[in-house]
Length: 403
Image 1 (cartoon, rainbow, N blue to C red):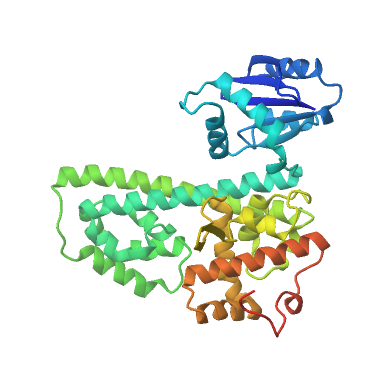
Image 2 (cartoon, rainbow, N blue to C red):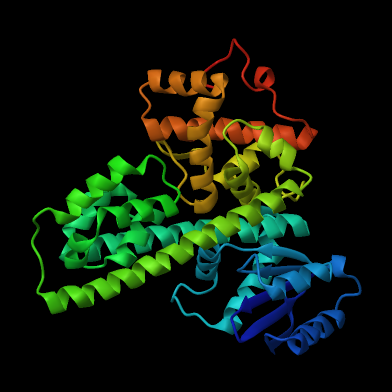
């Protein structure tokens, strides 16, 4: 075997080749370009005849370089940067660091400890496409939340009447349309009831007369105000935020449609959507973060560990503590927690299992995590045997709730 360590960056990559005895065979710094990839493959070809004889350690699981190396047939180990930093201490307790040294450390890591690391999975192109769309969709939702918080904070400074009028519905189409039409308290007071009603109808509201009257009264209620010139400037800024929010919301809706279409075309979609609590968006998120490589997870336990739903045990001497797993894929952990919450309403078996955990004095979030752990195991079984979800198999009537 030829072991290769790559310390990557945006502009160049440091490469180190090592044999199984730990002898350095070559070093090189290559550009992040097709020419650099050709140099890397030429260097490897000087010492290895077949791609199967090469194992590569790198600190990222994605990117054009990783994709090209996978396509060439090399075995790749994507090493977590935290784990790599701990390995670095084996070579220098002085905490010194260099790109050249990191490349050698990664090559030596895959030489001695590659059996302790998971090989990079090879997801299908449809699976990769779903991952891109699902992550972009979730990121835009986070952006919407951030912009909504900014807008709420800005309105609190000069336009409290608008907050009173819309409350928790500030980031919806009708409120944003009205804010663009009347971005200052003076303009809000002058807004006619008919215009408010018309804006609510255009936003898709029904039975708007009573709601329009409530908004009209809230905008005209007495409130503390900034000087007119300051209020106008703050209104311009608030209207700009409202316009950006409307565009983000429209992009979220567009991505959701694209995500649904991509998921329907995946061969595993029917299995995912058969599980209780998984709809189009949540099912796509779960599939995206797990990946669709059938050989990525050795068993259900490995899948649960990756999801972060299984607990960890810390034992030393007479002390033994079981804790939640916090080093995990946060996007996947969030999706599994939401999945468990939705499954409570969709599956009688999931509801019984959740209630059994609460009866054991588990808190709501802990009970959801335990339920999510069970659901991940059920998903693994369905995928492994290519079967749709069955309530009677997943949740037998007589079961050990603590299992």
